[in-house]
Image (cartoon, rainbow, N blue to C red):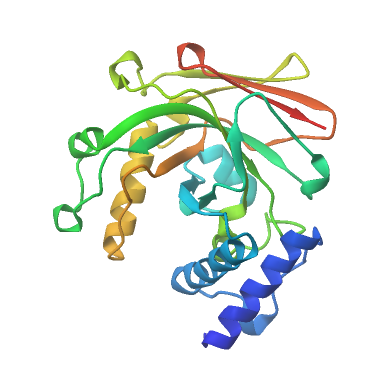
Length: 265
């Protein structure tokens, strides 16, 4: 795909988000046919978000579809990644306006903060090396909101191009002692309006969310890219993607890791 069509696709996706007008599909000439085209469009789209707000910066990455149930929901068979923005993130106990979203879903996710840059020459990374590069763990909720009317039908490349459907990221308190947690089996309970909606587990995320982080680091290294010191990585949902609606009070309870609360008005 030539640069003009890459830019055209990014323009359409950017305007769809800004104007909250969802699209059926991208025009044929600018619909990505492979991962390389998809991530190229994503990169241009990210630049547009940064230009839109000069105070906005990329603060990390999100990983999508590390959960088999989530993969089935949108008919994909492998993970993918996108970007997290400062302008589209906040601490727990926040209030979000539902008018800023088209058809949002919430996903409870384990997130990590990176201690130091990764040396590409050491890739592929073992789990032991990944652990040593993690600074902090924190509970989080990702709000996903596709620019496509039916994201179950557009395929993985279009979802990647759309910054992996990321819309917002909400995080809780950071903890630096990873040994307090068993990431092979850590329950997460989602409440909506004080009722248990879903019970998930860290083992839904590629069996362990650190496996998800490892997938991302090695995927980026294969492209000659790295994670930076202090990047936040949201590793993928512990439950299926859960639809949320105006008026919902949402709580994701990560046990001793903490709770994430959101008032969706």
